[in-house]
Length: 341
Ligand code: KG4
Ligand code: ZN
Image (tube, rainbow, N blue to C red; front, side, top):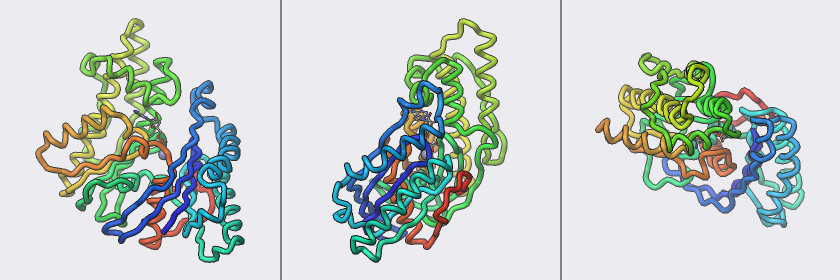
């Protein structure tokens, strides 16, 4: 089936068209188009996402992206239109939902009476971004770590359709912590890629920042204490080398993410580890995860999306809506800023 997906939960306007086939045991995706209009330049002067500006940009960009996909609406002929309903910024989510409703009605009027309009979860989108371009089959059970600007979640997956939450952050998400630490270091928004860049020039062992909750037996996370430690370090060391601060911070955050994920994988007898979300674009995290898995000698299979599917995109929303369709899971077509996984 052909799926047209729309994503407007935060500061990226995204539309994708994919072809999905296969069962829940072996879904297959062909990405026909995956368009993203980034708003980074617009929000950068404000040091973060301004919801009103984000909404205005989505309203402007959605028709532009759709016409770039194909100016002739009837030739798109999707079986499903999927739109993100949450979590995210509600005015932005409504923009996507209303646009999707309009297109659904237009396509129906053009004669496609079978077309369906469905809501999708942004978090499931990240989770299933891992199956967009599978090079080998995922073996279950699996442990999935979602690391984005709004979430840090650890899941135990029995199969693609069944999972349970093991833990999540009790305060800041890890991506949010990258953004806040970047601001302390006078680096522009979004902070993740900036920290990654300068951390490469620093020594990750020069400053020993705390690893919050790493030794606790639960699978929750906490990053606000780490952020405060960086703040105090900068207050007390006026001549601190920011490359070392960035590298030390990154190492501390990644030690916690990797340490807890691997411990969960061992405890639950996982065969695979899946990582996704904006922070998964960090090449140091990708490399450290692979190194730690190799060192653990547990032969976990490791899945992490191509860079273009780590940040927000609509191809992942299409993939998750195909899984939802196959497992008969439905979301209300209403914006829900706090939708949980
Ligand atoms: O998944 P995403 O695009 O949006 C949300 O759903 O939140 O994630 C955005 C987050 C931001 O906090 C950004 O700083 C972080 O992902 N990020 C990174 C990197 N690229 C993006 N964090 C660390 N290293 C990166 N290379
Ligand atoms: Zn996201």
